[in-house]
Image 1 (cartoon, helix red, strand yellow):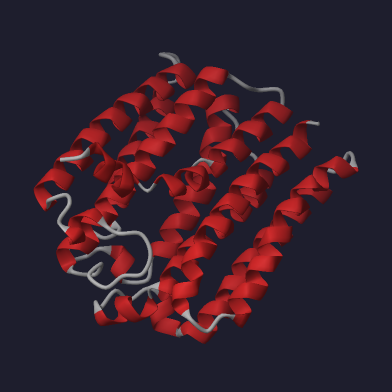
Image 2 (image 1 turned 60 degrees about the vertical axis):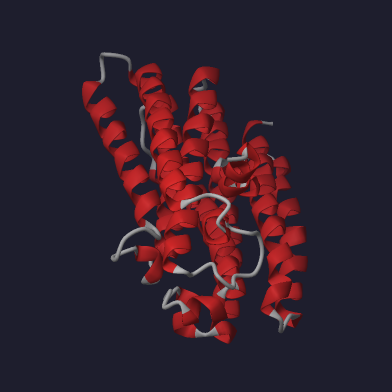
Length: 298
C-alpha cells in the first residue's frame, strides 16, 4: 500500500489548525514568564498525533458507513478502496501507540516525578482525547452523527488545547485564559461547520445529523457568521483586559481574509464552492494564533 495514501488520509491541511491552540497557549505562557522548548515541541507533536488519529478514524468510520460515497472535496481512502478498513484500523492503532508515547514524554517533561496527580490527570486527558477522536465517526453511537461534533471541536481544539498547554508550562489556571481559548475553539468549530455546510446533502442522505443538517443551510450560514464574530469579540475582550500597547491588536489582520470569506459564503448558493474556503479559514485561524501570540510578547 502506497505511503502517499496514508499521507492523504492524514489530511495534512488540517494540521496547522490543530496546533493553533498550542501556539496560543505557549505564547501566553511565555508572556507570563514561563516557557520550555521541549514542552512546546512535544505538545505540537502530541497534538498532531491526536489530529492524525482523528482523521484516520474519520476516514474509516465514514468509509465503512458509506457516508463518503458521494462526498465533495478530498478523496477519502477507505471509501475509494485505496486503503482497506483493516489497514486503516492498524494505522489508527500504530498512530495511537506513537502518540501515547509522545504524550507520556510530554507529561514527564512538564511534571517530572514530583507532580504525580497532574501526571495522572493529563494522561487521562490523553486517553480521553484518543477515545473522543475515534468515537467521532466510529461505532453505532458516533457523536459526529448526532450533531455533537461542534462541541467536540470547541472543547478539544479550544479549551483543552489552549488551557492545557498553558498549564503544562505554568502549573497554573487563570480564568482569563478562557477568552483566547474560546476564540480558538470557535474558529475551529467554524471550520467544521463549513465542512458540514459543504457536505449537507450527502450527510442528510447518510443520516449523519450534523448541526447543519438539523438547522438547514440558511441558518447554518448565520451560525457560521456567529462563530467567527464571537471569536473576534472574545479576543478583543482579552486584549483590553491585558492592554499595554496597540501591537496587541495585530491579530485583527487575520480577520481580513475571514471577512472576505464571510462575504463569499453569503453570496455562494453552491455548496461545492465552499470546499476551497476550508483551507482559508483553517490558515486564517493559524495566522490568528501566531499574531495573537506575538501581540502578547512584543
